[in-house]
Length: 64
Image (cartoon, rainbow, N blue to C red; front, side, top):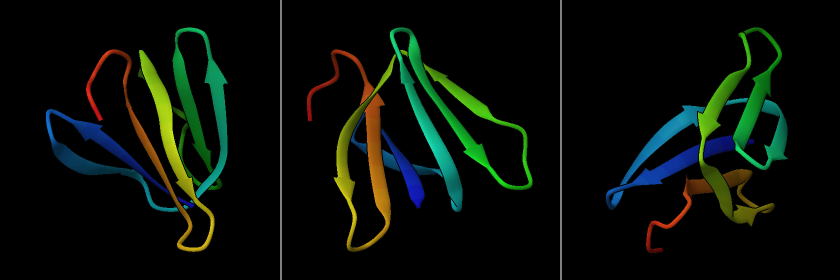
């Protein structure tokens, strides 16, 4: 799955081949097979597109 962060109206690919995404109270942790896990503080899942393999995340409080 590709993970995309929407911030200030712009989209940035955070991970191309995410193998795991963990949602916690303080943010999201994204793991891939060959890289160190990434943590995005204050992020929430906005949408999951299973057909296209895309997860869109954004900062809490940001307008969609």
